[in-house]
Image: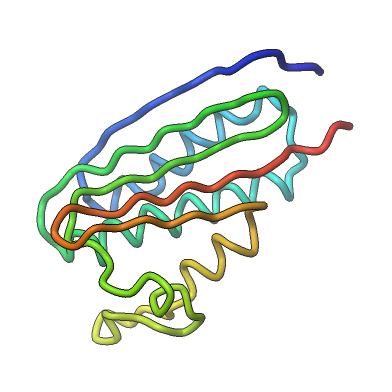
Length: 144
């Protein structure tokens, strides 16, 4: 299956933990046009889950807010962007360290960014305090 050009999809939803599985399912359905392996699909779903959960837990900390997920397919590459307008990240480098969490009382493992990095080919995080965080993840889907 050969895909030409760019194709883009965007969803916006409330920062409610029940919406994490919704986001994961929508992105998975969107990427199926590239005919990914089950492993590639599981990797993308896990990365999306972690990014959305980070926005809900750390970006908004239980407050109401909006999360925007954008997907773009170009050729065999999927780019997933997860954006929030929450509190932002003071130290991105520290936040990306495995086992680091700002919410230990919420029993968070501190592995979200490590999983995103492990399951995707590229991970970029940008953040501004009191304005929000944007996570951009890319993955090339292997041709069969």
